[in-house]
Length: 245
Image (cartoon, rainbow, N blue to C red):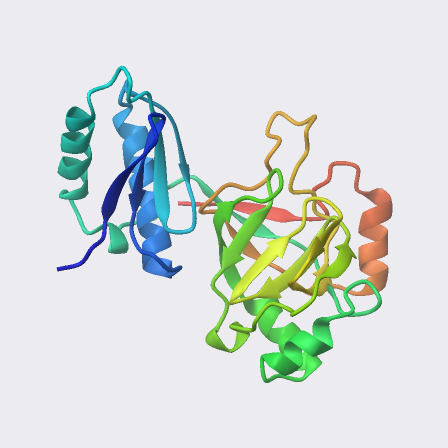
């Protein structure tokens, strides 16, 4: 019998429903879909919800709300379907974010490509075709962890840190991509550069991306990137979007 889904309390502030102990597409799908179902149920006891890579968190005041009642609700909802094959939430966005790969802007493309068993041109072609999901938001405001890439991109983190990559950097490790919100050190490899801002504090929607959104990173030239950087005032970085049903 599987140990998952697993329900655990988090102190007296909430409940965590975990669908696996390691990252996988079905477990991430389950976390996203279950969160959407809880949001749709609009339980008065739940003040906020969020997801990690493979879990759904419900903020619940367990001092005032009977735990057994919440456990009954959650187990009843879990029993309604196979969450690992559930449809993803509606209203998500597909983003096409222009990316310059390699050059002096993203100097670790060749190293990452070699680890993935590809030459640089083949790596760019594969990354440009990839369509990844925002698995979770974390580490910095609005910063997405995205995946999963093909298995050949299950490349390890570096042994040492890169002292800093800039905001908008596209980095890769363990079959995942991240767009950096701010300049920061990292152990992941810097393979591309975008002009996309994941955090826009003055916007009506400060976090540009949401868990479940999907992204593509079409390749552009350095001159096209420079033009976007010089003319884009919105922080969208030349991105185009479409709504996913």
